[in-house]
Image (cartoon, rainbow, N blue to C red; front, side, top):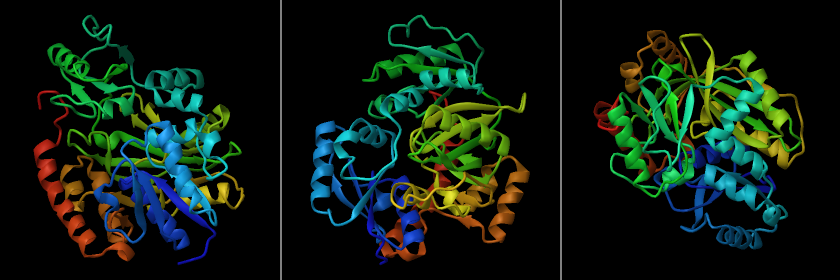
Length: 408
C-alpha cells in the first residue's frame, strides 16, 4: 500500500461510501475506513474500506464528537481526511466543525448555507435570486394539510422538504417521491405522511413531462478557497423504481453542457460554498429549459459516474485539503456509461432509442463501469452478492417500473 501520509475517513457505509473508497484506492492505492450508524452490504467484506465503528446514535452531536475524537486519538500519526457521504453526516460535520477542525481535514459548507440549500423551500428562493428555473411549487404544512389545494393541475409530485426527517419516519405505502394523478390520491398521501412522525414541510410540484431520461445530474467540488475545481453533468438514462429508491439514479451517461455548468460554477462561488455538491434537474421538453429540483451538500449517490468518465473525485479533495494544489475549474466532458443495473435493464426500459444506442456503443468500446464491481476487491462473498443483486434487479423492475403513485 502506498505511503501517502493521509487516511480517508468516510462517514456512512452505503454505496456512496464504497464509491469514494474506490476513488481513493484507484488514485492513491490506499484503503479507507468508514464510520457510520450501521453496516450496509455495499461496504461489507471489502479490502478497500473497513467499517471501523457503527454507532446507532452518531447523529447526536455529543456522540459524534466523542466517536471522532476517540478515532483521532489513536491515529495522530497520519492526516485524517474526513468525507461525509450523506446529508446527515454533512450536517454533523458542519455543525461541529469548530470541535473537530484540529483533528480532521475536510471541506463542507457553513451550516446556515447548508440549511438554505438542503431545505427545498429555501433552495427555491435562492433559485429565484440567481435566475434558475424550477417546477411550479407549493408548500404543505401540518397546519394546512386539511385545506390545501394545488394551484396547478394534476399530475403533481409530492416529496418531503426535510429528507433526513422523512427518511426516519414510517407509514404504510411510503415512497421516496410520489407522482399523484388526482385530488383523492393527493389527500390520501398527505394524510398518510402526516399520520407518521414527519411534521416538516411537504413540497408539491407540477410534474415536468418526460421519463427518467429527461433528468440531468450535476456533481461538483468547490475548494475551501471558494473556487470551483470540478464540475460534471450526467444524462440520466434510468432511475430506480422501488418505493425507497425512486429518484435514485440507476444508469447515467456522463457529458457536458458548458453554458449551464458556467452558470452553476458562478452560483457556487458567489454563495461561498465549500466541498462536494450535487444538483438534480430535469430538461423540460416544453421549452428546452432545465428545471432544478434539489441540491445535496455532498457528492451524489451516483457520483462515481464522474470517476468513470476519468475525473477522480478523491483527487480534487486531496489536492485542496492536503496538498494545497490549485487549478482552474475542470469541466468533465468525457462520455462513459455508469450503471448499477444490468445492461439488459437499460436496453429494455429506456424509451429513448438514441440513448440506448449510445449506451450500447459506449459498452462496446469498453466505456461502461459498474461502481460495485471492482476487480481488486472482488472476493467470493462480494462477487456472489453482486451477481445476486444484479439478478434481482430484473424482478424489481418488472414489479415496480412506472409505479410511483400512492395506490400502486
